Image 1 (tube, rainbow, N blue to C red):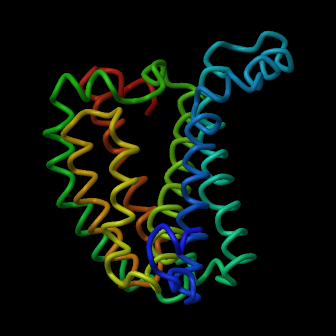
Image 2 (image 1 turned 135 degrees about the horizontal axis):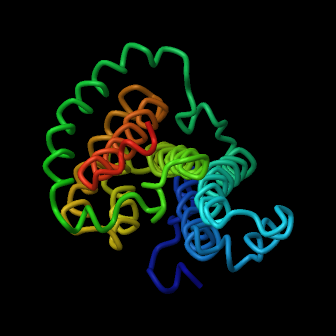
Amino acid sequence: MLERLVGRDDLLSQPEDRDAWVVLMTATIMLLIFFYWGRPGGYVASGTSARVRDLTAGGSVDFVGAGAYLWWGLSSLVWRLAVPFAIGWWLIKMRPVEFGLRFRGIAKHFPMYGAMYLVMLPVLIWASSFQSFLNFYPFYDRAGAGGTAFWIYEVGYALQFVGVESFFRGFLTFGLVRRFGLLAVPIMTVPYTMIHFSKPMPEATAAIVAGLVLGFLALRSRSFVPGIALHVGVAVTMDLLVLARLGQLGNII
């Protein structure tokens, strides 16, 4: 049927073509599942928040609310790392290390990522002065109160970025590079930019640059792990800068 529609009989004749189909279809399904069940709203929709409230005998509202972000982080590990990497290993015989989950030899690349963080720092300071960012960050609306709930939120937030880098710079980029070469990076950048559409437009626009740069650096270092450190560092810095501008930083330090 496909051959009749496109007039070609060789679309899936090469292993790289079949592998690309597996990667792209797996990524599409994972994006769908994560959007509806993996984000903080899924914590409530799944009934997990009610069970947590029951287990803690009513619990604190802070703990129950912050738990949504821990759910977000753990869901990111499942749907953006564990499941796609397992499918890749099973169907296209690519091990996690071939998807960029590599620690050996990455230390020499950290100075580059550190330099990128320093370049970003004045941009973050500037961006945190805009009302759109002050209204948006931190995601957890009681973060400024500090306490255990703040750290639960930040742990979940950080874990979420482990999943982001694993999925976009790992599964998609390394999974497609054998078929598309360096075009794998802009292909990955399309859905990566789209997950930022709910954020302030300057950040969504910057995601295009970030996707391209982090994608090329991941291929160069053969690892997405340094990108996790950079992404977490930038995100936590933005939270702290916003809290400082709101006069709430003293509650958590």
